[in-house]
Length: 251
Length: 224
Image (tube, rainbow over all chains, first blue to last red; front, side, top):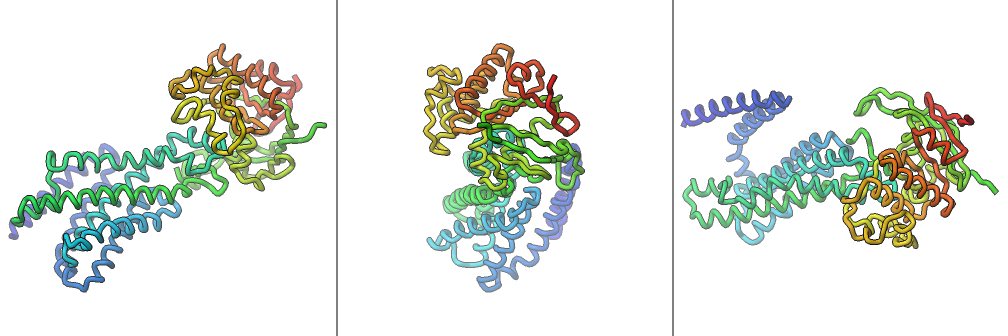
C-alpha cells in the first residue's frame, strides 16, 4: 500500500516537473507549477477527510457543494480578469445549474440520498461548469476585443449592448463547448470516463456502469452549457459603461 | 433660418498610452470648440493619429469626453438616451463592417430596430446597390459595395446627422469617387448635417467650404 502511494507521488512529481518545463515555453510555468502543486496537496487533504465528510449529516453535503461553487466561481472570476459583477454571477450560475441538474439523480432514485453520492456527483457537475465558464468568458472577452469594430458598428446604429455582443457571446459559448462536444461524440470510443472506470474497477456490471456514466455525462454537458449561457448573458453589462460604450479596461 | 445642430464647447479627451487600468494618459483633444449648423457639411482634416476619429466618437458617445460639453439641438448629449442619440447621429466608419446576413438584412437593421418607415429598396437604389444584390451575402461584397451598404444602413435609421470617418479612404479611386458623389447627393436630398473626416486636402476643398484642421489637439478653420 505504502509502495503504491510512494510510486504514485514520485510519478506525479515527475509529470508535474515535465509539465512545468514545457509550460515555460509559453510563459505559464509558474501557473502550471502552482496549480499542479495545489492539486496534489488538495487531493491528499481531501483523501484524508473524505470518509469523515461522508459520515456527516446530509445538510453538510449541501454546504460543501456550495463552498465548491464559491471556489469555482472565484476561479472563473479570476479568469475573467476580475470583471465587475463576475464573482457573484459566476457563483450563482454554477451553483444553481449544478444543483438543478443534480437533484433529478436522487429524485428518480438513480442514487440513494447519501453524501457518498451527492458530493462526488455534485463536484463533477460544478467542476465542469467552472471549466466551461472560464473558457467561455476568456473567449468572449477575446472576441469583443478582436471584433470591436463590429460591436461598435452595432452600437453606432443604436443597438443595445446585448444585441451588439450577441455574436461574440455565441462564439464564446461555442468555443468553450467544443471539448465537451468532442468528448460526448467519442465517449466509449476514445476514452472511458472516470465514474465508469471506478465502477468497473470495483466490480460493477459494465452495462449498469455505462448507463450511469452516460447519464452523468449528458448532465455535465447540460450544466456547462446552461451555466455559461446564464453567466455570459448576465455579465454582458460588465463590458459596457452606463453610456453603452465598450469599457477599455474590461477588454 | 440657420440653427446650430451640433456644438462642442471646450472639449478635452485623453487616451491611455497603454492598455489596462491606471495606465498614464495623454491628451489628444485639448479644448475643441465647434458649431455645425443643421444641414451643413464640414470637413475635418489632419494627419493620422491626431484625434479626428476620437472627435467623431465623442459626438455619438462611442467614447466619453473628459471635460467640456457637446450639444445636439442645444441639449447636452448626456441628457439623451445613448441609443436614441446614436439613431439621430449616425456614423460611417473608415473600414466598412457588414453584419452576418444578406445585404437587405443589413440595410433593414435600423428599420427593424427603430421601426422607421425607411424604404429599403429605395435606399439600396439611392446608394447605388442594384436590386439583384439585395439577397446576396453581405460578406461577399467588394469593399466599395460594403461601404454603400453601411451608408444605406445608417440612413435606414432616419438620422439627422452623419459622422463620416474617412468613408472613402479604404476604397480604390473609382469607388471613392462614386461614394463621395453619393454622400454629397444624399446630404443635399436628406438635408443631413455632416461631419466628414478626411486626410485628403483636395477632397476636403472639393466637398465643402467649411474646412477645419485638427492639430496639436485644437481645431482651427482653414481659410486657405
